[in-house]
Figure 1 (cartoon, helix red, strand yellow):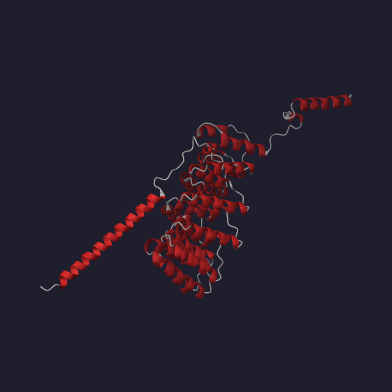
Figure 2 (cartoon, rainbow, N blue to C red):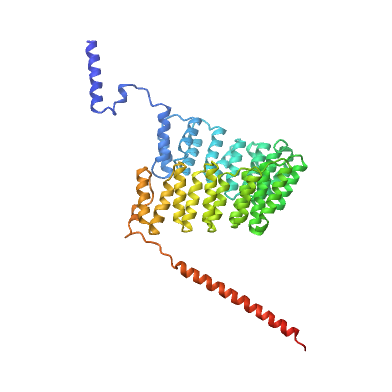
Length: 483
């Protein structure tokens, strides 16, 4: 009899499996209630994907009979922070703090504040920071650092300083961590003067972190392109026995070059080289990053000759250029119409065995297409393919439409077919290959007309110059004639 019952049960299970193997009744296996993971998934679904208003969200949460813990609340926020709107997460957290039988811990409040700070939700930050203070909870130093950085980045540096001044209300001590956090936050957006004010009032708190504090303040003055104050910080560092490192000098160099780029382009090279000489006198060797700062500013003012000279100077001084150095020089050559020299620089880089990032080719292809040199852009793409870097999709998407709009539909079709053979997913439409749809760009003036206009302008300039010269000679004769 027992054997018959066992066979009947196994037959029932086989029948159910055969009919719908995915829909097996849970009761056939276990009568244990859903575990914590199931409750977590259901709550995350309600917070992230629930319909209706925020009041409807609270009503849905009230219907849950599961027991909550503070750790479960943090797990739900962690699971939903990248999917759910911040307002729904905030309402869930506020509901948890009011309705739960267990009391939320300070760590849960701190974690929630950090999440909202990362999401840049100022309203949520204000609400939870206020609750933190009203309930006499402790704010962690890490939480303060994240909140201060968010406030400064959003233009509320006054609120960040106000929070710092009232840290004692949050049971958060003034120490090297909190002082460094507010200084870094302020200096990241160029508020160096206010950061120095904080340092003056808390000198005893920065004894072990002075180098870090000075670097931040130097960066803050450099962000304002204030060369005078940046130089003062360097001198002050030396006076207190802190030798500026490579980061400090590169920061000052960037400040100096960007300042000269706007006000004194002719002083870019000599003043930058003086800084590098000072670095060497302090036993700090300039790196490719140091030279690239200068090359970037030289490219911004289209200083072609100086850019090529700096590239040669790097090699002579024993500093090997990286692919960024070659990119900056090739870029300024292409932008000023020196395509042959630009290609030579790129080939020189490849000959040195340097393998650039894909961005190197993306940028140069875009520049060459922008100055209407599609043939050179296609040659650059061939170099990219020979380097086997991959990631050819963006290059195809730029070149194919550009070739077709310049009238070379045959070459555009070749690249299209080549991309399909390689399995590259293209973003551009196949309609660009149709001459009846794609409008071909035609230059408004021919080269002969341009040359004629140029010759005419030169003749006019010469005529004006000769006229001025004749007028001067006539005036001289009048002054020399006897009265």
